[in-house]
Image 1 (cartoon, rainbow, N blue to C red):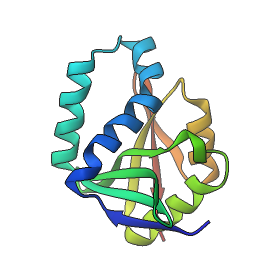
Image 2 (image 1 turned 60 degrees about the vertical axis):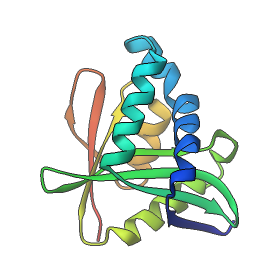
Image 3 (image 1 turned 180 degrees about the horizontal axis):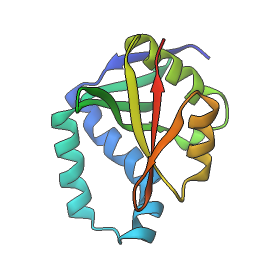
Image 4 (image 1 turned 90 degrees about the vertical axis):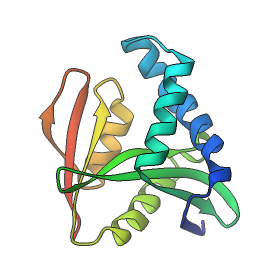
Length: 144
């Protein structure tokens, strides 16, 4: 699979929200309940405050990253692979592309404790749990 990463454009914003809903709704609904308007506003704020990247398989979008600087550290706010491309190595290759962009930086992220598949994926890709919050594990990785 020929995977590439590009800076997102305004026309990608709805795609980001659609993937976000598909991937996160179950976790959020279980923990706090789902409020579509709140989620849409939060997504808009995240879009405005992050560096937004689209992942492509040749010309087809297969996922995205949203990155922000938090407390002097690079933070992956969102990393979502389209469900059609999961468990096929796309996530690991995408993470390698992102690590290339972030060389020599520390990277952190949060994972729902209920999302064991994501937790396993990040551990397999060099992240370790550094902290626990109520519903999340905070994970960290030093990109070499």
